[in-house]
Amino acid sequence: MKLSHLAETLIGSEIVKLGNQIKERMRQGEHIYNFTIGDFDSSVFPIPKELEDEIIDAYKHHFTTYPAAEGILELRQSVSQFLKEREGLEYGVNEIQIAAGGRPLIYAIFRAIVDKGDKVIYAAPSWNNNHYAHFTEAEHVLIEATVENNFMPTANEIKPHLKGATLLCLCTPQNPTGTMFPKEELEKICDMILEENRSRAEGAKKLFLMFDQMYWTLTFGGNEHYNPVTLRPEMKEITVFVDGISKVFAATGVRVGWSVGPELIISKIKAILSHVGAWAPMAEQKATAKYLLQKENIDRYLVNFKEEISYRLTEISKGLLQLKAEGLNVDVVAPQGAIYLTIKVDLVGKKKADGTLLQTQADVTQYLLDEAKLAIVPFTAFGASKTSPWYRLSVGTCRKEEIPEFLGKLKEAMQKLS
Image (cartoon, rainbow, N blue to C red; front, top):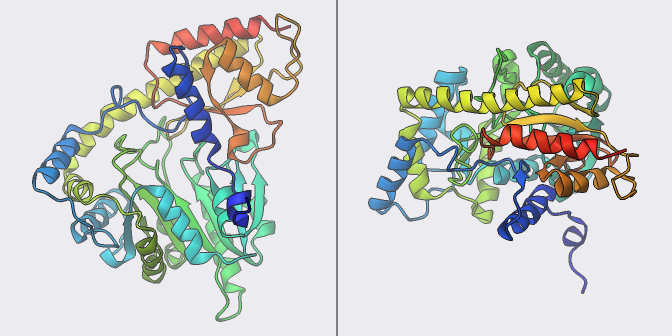
């Protein structure tokens, strides 16, 4: 049966597909260390109690109708205040769009800015930019980032592609790598964007920056988050942020996200989403509007939350470095932010106990799942080459007692290879 070109060429989320397969095996009783999905186990990382109470109270007061298409005014006011107090960003309520998490916002940003054939620049690995570029029939300009730069695209790598481009997609702390842009590198990128736009004819479409900072509060080890508008105020007219409560409050299922940017672009995003209908629920909007103003409660929550995430990232990183010191073919990039570790498991060419050769990285991924019961996401799911031996390990569902367990099983599985 013939369907649309988009339907026949679009690839569904590889991460969701993998996560579903793992969940099915677990449902059948198999014990798997499932570090695939960028989500949280709510029994380990519950949302803030005060936010939960506000949500329950909002439902008790029957806030169950349609919200305003742009998001309720109270929430946009709270987001404005939250960003001003915590990042020094000043945006009015007409420069803020609320939606059901980051995905519909990113989709709408692409739709509002990108025409068929426009150049969209993004790095691999990165989260879903390849799919959104496909949605808009854009020209994909993919920069394969390297471990030498913590898998973050550099200004020098980006520069040759800026001429004539429409959208540059950046994320920091980055999904899937858990690494961040140094201040100096982000400044260089901003300066290049501004220079490119100054070179364009009057009335020509500008080069815009989509800046995904969904994990910006989750930084560790003295690392600091920077944003383009604070570093270069001129960037404000061409930068569209993606942000929300999904990661900062372990509230992925609460579905409240926001985009902030120039009023003209935000108004177009609103128009697009008014047809898609991807609104955050009214009760959750009411609750989030109240919670974002509770500075002391938020600060208290973040101290504990960040300590728990940091502990997991650090302990797993230490364990993998120990395996590396013992001669096993693993490596890890030092954690900087988000809930992710970038790890390397390079086993292609090794033989299993039954003599079967691990010929591809896909074989390695399957071996880790079958033998070590370890489920992690290969960077191929984030646009990297099929031969990349690097993986994303997400700690949002990790229990502390599992760390030595799965490291031990990984060691055993690797020692069985020849």
